[in-house]
Length: 425
Ligand code: EPU
Image 1 (cartoon, rainbow, N blue to C red):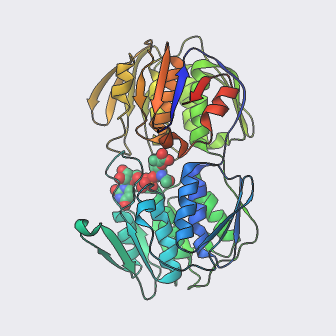
Image 2 (image 1 turned 180 degrees about the horizontal axis):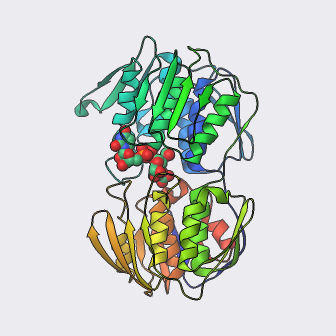
Image 3 (image 1 turned 180 degrees about the vertical axis):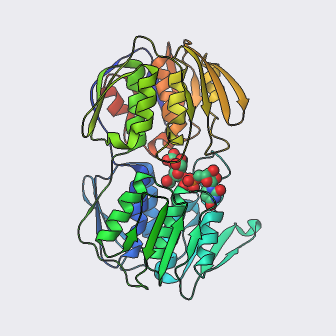
């Protein structure tokens, strides 16, 4: 039987809650192990399902993956034996495509299926394919009936001047890693600027790569012409800003001095500013945020943006919070075409939401929510539903716990220790 979470609404959150390492940082660093011919060590590992899937994918390529401590992972790609990604595993999560870049750079070829991940939009991969072509690779796509596999090969990869059509996060990471072992200079323009990209670049730089400008729209990489990287120290996964932001949103509604620990408030400046506009009471430290609910929250307008703007991954929990705010709020999802799938279920729970178009909603609040049985469509909406259950009267069951476990470690235990009434069933 698939697992689910049962939530009883009405509890308050208090005390401390620690943020784990970021899913979207650790997965890319695990992929980067292929750029090395010596073991790399990753610390502050989040114990989540996507990390297990990435370990399986890398193991299938011949990478040796060993836990070297409760939150430490050692990856050794010295014995890389194939350049084909296992399609069954790769289709289960989007970050799988990031592995293709280092594999291509190290072996001159790679084969992978169209990557899976959350069904939140079309999620094309033209940015990756165009970048590889410009660097001298040949790309072929086998027909759908033969599984829709992509084959990319290059006798030698040469640096190129790339302008990304959209600042894709995984596209930037993948092309940056491909360029690290290429011959000559690559420039990536209109690059994504997410903190997970800068963290990855810093680690690669400390290991012999020559990357400048990560965290800005223009990244320059001088390739090593095939020379693998050498680690000089371990990589510490940065705190998950989306997990921290989700706890913050919960605290703004039902927190009584909820202290979110081991996070980086600098990565959440825009969500924090919006919560303050709504009336939430927030205090910041170097690596913590304390939040208490306001007597009354007021509505705001939210538009999702690339970093440092408001993150699309926090749109679902904010939508839930806005059902509790007075007046009319607007949510405009600009990154993905299909990321308002949670709205229908929230309406069934009692929310007053008008869908203006597939990317825009108007929320009137505050409204009382009623517990229901709902299915988690993706990990971010799944956690938002758990939050809706915490606000609702009665009992809520969120099915498809796997989706939530993909990105949040033992979430029910951690929220329970902060006061929530949640159990895994
Ligand atoms: N896009 C293209 N062509 C491409 C690549 C992207 O048109 O070749 C479009 C997408 O369709 C989308 C936009 O560009 O409309 C932005 O997509 P991006 O490529 O930046 O997203 P991603 O790299 O697939 C990562 C995170 C997502 C997060 C987005 C946006 C990982 C593994 N995933 O996805 O995280 O929402 O950036 O910040 O890093 C999640 O963790 O739940 C999640 C979905």
